Image 1: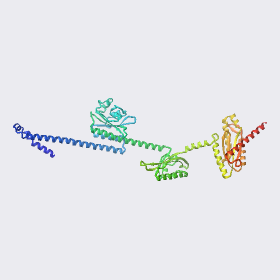
Image 2: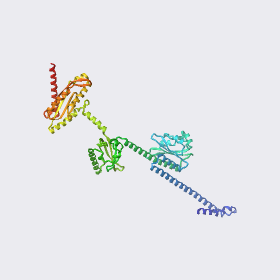
Image 3: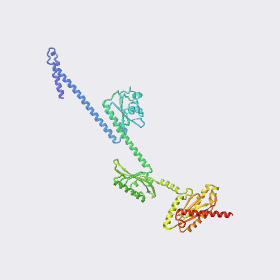
Image 4: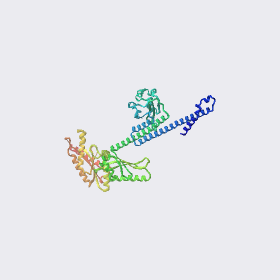
Length: 534
């Protein structure tokens, strides 16, 4: 204010030099030089003040712009933290940019994995225009945004009426009422293009330094928004996938804290055990498995505790445990246990997966049965019989008991096959097996070792004479007619008997003796038959 007053005063003082122009004509020039000097000083001062005001105004505007940009950034970032929907956050970003330049209209397009651009936010452009550009493919010469997404570079088109990138889209230019379009690719930290941020104007316009700053910073902020949103969506999909897997898997997934308390059990546990998840969560491991299995579990727990005390990682474990179900029956399951660690590598709990072994055990049992039994008669085969004979011999030696071994061969069986076919022969063998089982004791073993040969183990007999009486009983049973679908068939059998310890002390010796006596009996029958014929 003082400066203006001083200048105004100086102007009044020098006024006579211009008012009294007659003084110049009369040759009195004493007023001339001071007047010009004063005028120069005033002009220079005014120019300085005007320039200073312009700079001051520019600084104020720049400061306001920075503050507004920071305000917009803070708003957008807070929305990201609150996990607001992607479109809502992008709309806020676009509106913030438009607020900084009221003459601008902004858009955000997202690029999918197939290279197609989709409108994510364009709140102030005509819906018809947005619908037209939604789904365009990124490519060279495809407008400003399509080219920017394709090249991964900023594209400035000052006049869309004459630029070759926009020639195919002049109808859209009329719809939107635009004349310039600047597009900035939105890239992640790896340089992958995620989409574009564009600024439109209704007049032919070249971007200023501030405009370039606005478009680049808006694109950078959009990158944060998009990547954060994609990360959240990926996490949600992952969590949903894991939840669905856990909820619908037949395997039981569970976690436990370091104090031995369950922290999670998947719903599939109820299908396996009959207990609800709530019931199971309130129980301890020792209440859920059979005592024999809990001993195994305790050993694993001790091993794990020792490893942790030694600074080692939690040892993985795979084993089979017998679980107790709600109705009292038991099921076998395979359990896999491992440690759970946080991002810092600190052990925070235990992860377990139990897999129902019921079907697998049924299959294994069936395979084991087939490996040890004759498929036609269901009797033990040579392999299982040999195992039982070894165990019976060991018992007999240890307790000084007697055991007997019978080798049985059917007589007249071949003519049955030749006359009536193998189907009838197979049915006959099955009925022979049934008669043998009904004749011997439950503790005895009857096996088919091939063709029409059978072998019988009597593990506990008082004396060999008792076994001889049983052999006669068997021969009498086999001699009775067989009814095969109305067909009466009559056969007989030859039996060779060997006893421990009288006839040998090993399975090989006993088998050889029984085989020799069987063929002796068969030879006697043949001789007798020949004698009868003669």
